Length: 384
Image 1 (cartoon, one colour):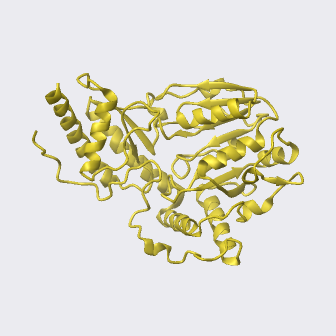
Image 2 (tube, rainbow, N blue to C red):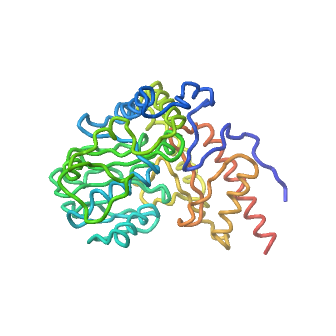
Image 3 (cartoon, one colour):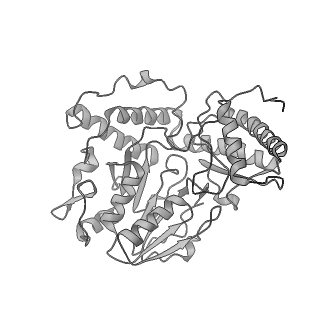
């Protein structure tokens, strides 16, 4: 079997969906100003944490009366904190169309045992939010990292809703439009679109969410790292950089560097345009080749960050094995790392196209995708 692979190569083969690629031209020297060996409660630590909060507000255009906190355990910790602290006051609606959303369903229905309606869609599809009762508390992902499906907008969320909206936006923040007036709780993690390091989550609360926190006490005990109130009042320090547990000041510095890069290139609009451009390279590639397709069935719901692809050639005999073989060939040649589909998702590839990725690298990758597909197909035939 001739190994006539392409000559052009992605300059950066890191297409992982989390932790994602660092900002372009990143070097560890950029982190030289990190407050290493200093307490996060010292003046310098508090200043850097506050800068991370306000930099987030500036780039994302978060309203001034919304609270932004840095919390433990990445996006997962932020979502769990919100659900454990806010749910139970009224009926909930759990909306899921991929594995992480399904995980939130399990937590609410089986762990918290809240009265909840569950609405699901298969991978590649999305739940119609017009069918959701927003007088209940609604928990949903904005962008399904493992399915490549996102909400096109928040038009179905009414302004006069009685319930809270709790939105896991970890693959959407800094890449997609988030309508803050429609979102009461929003969470994300640094290691997604901004290419930050792991273990830190962001929790963004609307005034309505704060009102719920100060007027409702859950029936279950709350672990220390979930507690957002004391004596019936919001712990304001959490939203000024006084974190619940010890943060990594190296990771904080890394996030500050990424925020500074985002500001220099033109802010949120520039970040969105980069992601759109990257994703379109893959969408156009799929349009030109009938053996590969976007997992998202409706073009309006295609993610511009976690682009999920499926193989559609009738000659493929074992879909999961074939997809793994393609991903392995790409990794073995050092042109695409960590691009296999998520373990619970349909067999295929998952290629990160967020703002820290260069379009030229995605273009080069498409040449290797075609090569790896042909090589895997030839290997399958030879083994038959």
